[in-house]
Amino acid sequence: SQELEQSPQSLIVQEGKNLTINCTSSKTLYGLYWYKQKYGEGLIFLMMLQKGGEEKSHEKITAKLDEKKQQSSLHITASQPSHAGIYLCGAESDSNYQLIWGAGTKLIIKP
Amino acid sequence: NAGVTQTPKFQVLKTGQSMTLQCAQDMNHEYMSWYRQDPGMGLRLIHYSVGAGITDQGEVPNGYNVSRSTTEDFPLRLLSAAPSQTSVYFCASSYDAGGRDTQYFGPGTRLTVL
Image (cartoon, rainbow over all chains, first blue to last red; front, side, top):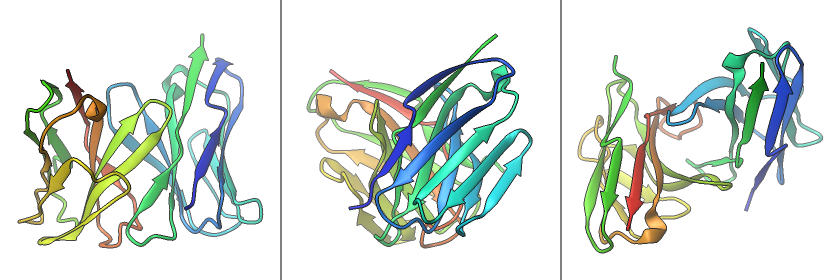
């Protein structure tokens, strides 16, 4: 079965610094989703990537899909306290109607 | 639109008790699903539905039942609660009946089974 591995598991970053979170699949990636979760809350959709080489940006967050590496990266530029939370990647699996998910990356921003 | 709503937000059960977690969406989405989130394990799919009257099992269905009598509602029933079911439960919905679309999540239900 397909698995998604996120790295790192947790990250502490000084405010203003850049950071990257990776999501690597054990099989070919077709659709890749990035979500953010704040403690005690649900998941908020960030971006969806569908094609190899695709890159999307929203404010200071950029996500890329590398089809050959079966990997997606999420890059945050000039991090702010509002970026703190848990970032999860999800992917369309080879099982119909089911998405699979990474374990999440916990991001802490130090002021 | 309220989006996806879940009740209750918190619940404590004793082993062997049963209960129903409620989920409703007002976006006319065909696809709805239930996940559990445990530390270090990400989201695991319990059950899903591709439309009213149609449900199927996900990765971890044992100990849970679902039904989908309307497009809006997708309750999750715990038949006989066990400590292993202590978790955070999320309901999600998406427009695409195949679930291959942006998922909208509810705020979650934190369940503790003693």
